[in-house]
Length: 204
Image (cartoon, rainbow, N blue to C red; front, top):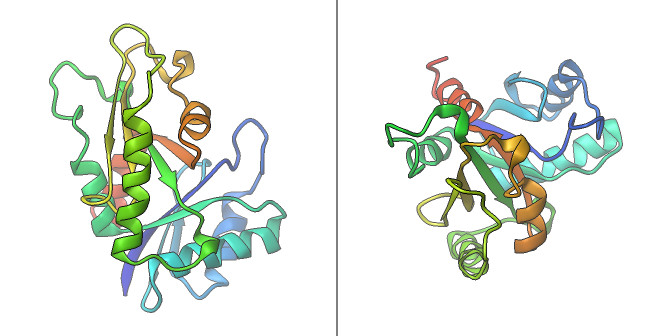
Protein backbone atom coordinates (compact mmCIF):
# COMPACT_ATOMS: atom_id res chain seq x y z
CA UNK A 1 0.00 0.00 0.00
CA UNK A 2 1.09 3.58 -0.65
CA UNK A 3 0.91 6.46 1.81
CA UNK A 4 -0.78 9.72 0.85
CA UNK A 5 -1.20 13.17 2.42
CA UNK A 6 -4.50 15.03 1.97
CA UNK A 7 -4.54 18.83 2.34
CA UNK A 8 -8.04 20.20 2.89
CA UNK A 9 -8.75 23.83 2.21
CA UNK A 10 -10.44 26.08 4.75
CA UNK A 11 -11.79 23.72 7.39
CA UNK A 12 -11.77 24.71 11.08
CA UNK A 13 -10.43 28.18 10.22
CA UNK A 14 -12.18 31.05 11.98
CA UNK A 15 -15.23 28.90 12.60
CA UNK A 16 -15.60 28.04 8.91
CA UNK A 17 -16.45 24.46 7.90
CA UNK A 18 -16.04 22.91 11.36
CA UNK A 19 -15.20 19.22 11.08
CA UNK A 20 -14.10 17.23 14.16
CA UNK A 21 -10.96 15.29 13.37
CA UNK A 22 -12.29 12.02 14.79
CA UNK A 23 -15.29 12.27 12.48
CA UNK A 24 -13.05 13.14 9.54
CA UNK A 25 -10.96 10.03 10.19
CA UNK A 26 -14.09 7.89 10.28
CA UNK A 27 -15.33 9.50 7.05
CA UNK A 28 -12.07 8.80 5.20
CA UNK A 29 -11.94 5.26 6.54
CA UNK A 30 -15.39 4.80 5.03
CA UNK A 31 -13.78 5.31 1.61
CA UNK A 32 -11.70 2.18 2.18
CA UNK A 33 -8.53 4.00 3.19
CA UNK A 34 -6.33 2.31 5.79
CA UNK A 35 -4.38 3.73 8.74
CA UNK A 36 -6.14 7.11 8.52
CA UNK A 37 -4.51 9.76 10.69
CA UNK A 38 -4.97 13.50 11.09
CA UNK A 39 -2.51 16.18 12.13
CA UNK A 40 -3.69 19.22 14.09
CA UNK A 41 -7.17 20.64 13.42
CA UNK A 42 -6.58 22.48 10.17
CA UNK A 43 -7.27 19.88 7.50
CA UNK A 44 -4.27 17.57 7.30
CA UNK A 45 -4.81 13.85 6.89
CA UNK A 46 -2.72 10.82 5.98
CA UNK A 47 -3.91 7.46 4.77
CA UNK A 48 -2.84 4.34 2.93
CA UNK A 49 -4.41 3.00 -0.25
CA UNK A 50 -3.46 0.33 -2.76
CA UNK A 51 -5.59 1.39 -5.74
CA UNK A 52 -6.48 4.60 -7.57
CA UNK A 53 -4.53 7.74 -8.35
CA UNK A 54 -4.09 10.64 -5.97
CA UNK A 55 -6.51 12.60 -8.17
CA UNK A 56 -9.11 9.85 -7.73
CA UNK A 57 -8.55 9.97 -3.98
CA UNK A 58 -8.90 13.77 -3.88
CA UNK A 59 -12.17 13.69 -5.81
CA UNK A 60 -13.54 10.94 -3.56
CA UNK A 61 -12.61 12.90 -0.43
CA UNK A 62 -14.29 16.07 -1.74
CA UNK A 63 -17.53 14.20 -2.40
CA UNK A 64 -17.40 12.30 0.89
CA UNK A 65 -16.84 15.42 2.99
CA UNK A 66 -19.73 17.17 1.27
CA UNK A 67 -21.96 14.16 1.92
CA UNK A 68 -20.94 13.71 5.55
CA UNK A 69 -20.42 17.30 6.71
CA UNK A 70 -22.09 19.69 4.25
CA UNK A 71 -19.40 21.98 2.83
CA UNK A 72 -17.58 21.23 -0.43
CA UNK A 73 -13.92 21.88 0.26
CA UNK A 74 -10.92 21.84 -2.01
CA UNK A 75 -8.60 18.87 -1.54
CA UNK A 76 -5.11 18.16 -2.79
CA UNK A 77 -3.63 14.69 -2.32
CA UNK A 78 0.11 14.09 -2.54
CA UNK A 79 2.03 10.87 -2.23
CA UNK A 80 4.63 10.57 0.51
CA UNK A 81 7.34 10.96 -2.14
CA UNK A 82 5.70 14.10 -3.53
CA UNK A 83 5.43 15.54 -0.02
CA UNK A 84 9.15 14.92 0.41
CA UNK A 85 9.85 16.90 -2.78
CA UNK A 86 7.77 19.79 -1.41
CA UNK A 87 9.87 19.80 1.75
CA UNK A 88 13.13 19.62 -0.21
CA UNK A 89 12.27 22.38 -2.69
CA UNK A 90 11.93 25.28 -0.22
CA UNK A 91 14.62 27.77 -1.24
CA UNK A 92 14.51 29.52 2.14
CA UNK A 93 14.76 26.49 4.43
CA UNK A 94 18.54 26.12 4.15
CA UNK A 95 19.27 29.78 4.89
CA UNK A 96 20.86 30.02 8.36
CA UNK A 97 19.16 33.33 9.15
CA UNK A 98 15.63 32.17 8.19
CA UNK A 99 13.85 30.97 11.33
CA UNK A 100 11.45 28.06 10.88
CA UNK A 101 8.53 30.10 12.20
CA UNK A 102 9.01 32.57 9.33
CA UNK A 103 8.46 29.91 6.67
CA UNK A 104 5.15 28.91 5.06
CA UNK A 105 4.00 27.08 1.94
CA UNK A 106 0.93 28.03 -0.09
CA UNK A 107 -0.26 25.08 -2.18
CA UNK A 108 -2.24 25.93 -5.33
CA UNK A 109 -5.13 23.56 -5.90
CA UNK A 110 -6.63 22.48 -9.19
CA UNK A 111 -10.17 21.17 -8.90
CA UNK A 112 -10.06 17.44 -8.26
CA UNK A 113 -13.69 17.19 -9.34
CA UNK A 114 -12.68 18.10 -12.90
CA UNK A 115 -11.16 14.66 -13.33
CA UNK A 116 -7.80 12.95 -13.58
CA UNK A 117 -4.63 14.82 -14.49
CA UNK A 118 -1.81 13.39 -16.51
CA UNK A 119 1.73 14.79 -16.35
CA UNK A 120 1.16 17.06 -19.35
CA UNK A 121 -1.96 18.57 -17.79
CA UNK A 122 -0.25 19.14 -14.46
CA UNK A 123 2.73 20.76 -16.18
CA UNK A 124 0.37 23.08 -18.08
CA UNK A 125 -1.45 23.91 -14.84
CA UNK A 126 1.86 24.88 -13.27
CA UNK A 127 2.93 26.94 -16.28
CA UNK A 128 -0.26 29.02 -16.18
CA UNK A 129 0.29 29.98 -12.57
CA UNK A 130 4.03 30.48 -13.00
CA UNK A 131 3.25 33.10 -15.65
CA UNK A 132 0.62 34.72 -13.43
CA UNK A 133 2.97 34.77 -10.43
CA UNK A 134 5.80 36.33 -12.44
CA UNK A 135 3.53 39.24 -13.36
CA UNK A 136 2.65 40.07 -9.75
CA UNK A 137 3.91 43.09 -7.90
CA UNK A 138 3.93 41.53 -4.47
CA UNK A 139 2.71 43.70 -1.55
CA UNK A 140 5.64 42.53 0.55
CA UNK A 141 6.88 44.29 3.65
CA UNK A 142 10.58 44.83 4.19
CA UNK A 143 12.33 41.48 4.46
CA UNK A 144 9.42 39.41 3.16
CA UNK A 145 10.07 37.09 0.22
CA UNK A 146 8.09 34.68 -1.92
CA UNK A 147 9.28 32.03 -4.38
CA UNK A 148 7.20 30.00 -6.82
CA UNK A 149 8.10 26.37 -7.57
CA UNK A 150 5.98 24.71 -10.24
CA UNK A 151 5.21 21.40 -11.90
CA UNK A 152 7.68 19.85 -12.39
CA UNK A 153 9.52 19.34 -10.10
CA UNK A 154 6.50 19.36 -7.76
CA UNK A 155 3.13 17.66 -8.20
CA UNK A 156 1.29 20.89 -7.46
CA UNK A 157 2.58 24.48 -7.62
CA UNK A 158 3.75 25.90 -4.30
CA UNK A 159 4.51 29.48 -3.28
CA UNK A 160 7.15 29.39 -0.55
CA UNK A 161 7.07 32.31 1.86
CA UNK A 162 9.63 33.81 4.21
CA UNK A 163 7.79 36.19 6.54
CA UNK A 164 9.97 37.60 9.34
CA UNK A 165 7.09 39.75 10.64
CA UNK A 166 4.76 36.76 11.00
CA UNK A 167 1.93 35.33 8.91
CA UNK A 168 -0.68 37.28 10.84
CA UNK A 169 0.82 40.60 9.70
CA UNK A 170 1.60 39.87 6.07
CA UNK A 171 -0.38 40.85 2.99
CA UNK A 172 1.00 37.74 1.25
CA UNK A 173 -1.88 35.72 2.62
CA UNK A 174 -3.74 32.74 1.25
CA UNK A 175 -6.56 35.06 0.20
CA UNK A 176 -4.11 37.32 -1.65
CA UNK A 177 -2.73 34.48 -3.77
CA UNK A 178 -6.19 33.07 -4.45
CA UNK A 179 -7.38 36.47 -5.62
CA UNK A 180 -4.26 37.38 -7.58
CA UNK A 181 -3.64 34.02 -9.24
CA UNK A 182 -7.25 32.95 -9.70
CA UNK A 183 -6.67 29.58 -8.05
CA UNK A 184 -7.90 27.98 -4.86
CA UNK A 185 -5.06 27.61 -2.37
CA UNK A 186 -4.29 26.32 1.10
CA UNK A 187 -1.38 27.42 3.28
CA UNK A 188 0.62 25.53 5.90
CA UNK A 189 3.36 26.72 8.20
CA UNK A 190 6.71 25.04 7.76
CA UNK A 191 6.50 23.04 10.97
CA UNK A 192 3.33 21.43 9.64
CA UNK A 193 4.90 20.74 6.24
CA UNK A 194 7.87 19.05 7.88
CA UNK A 195 5.65 17.06 10.22
CA UNK A 196 3.51 15.80 7.35
CA UNK A 197 6.59 14.84 5.37
CA UNK A 198 8.08 12.95 8.31
CA UNK A 199 4.82 11.23 9.29
CA UNK A 200 4.02 10.16 5.75
CA UNK A 201 7.54 8.76 5.40
CA UNK A 202 7.11 6.75 8.60
CA UNK A 203 9.63 8.77 10.59
CA UNK A 204 7.16 10.35 13.01
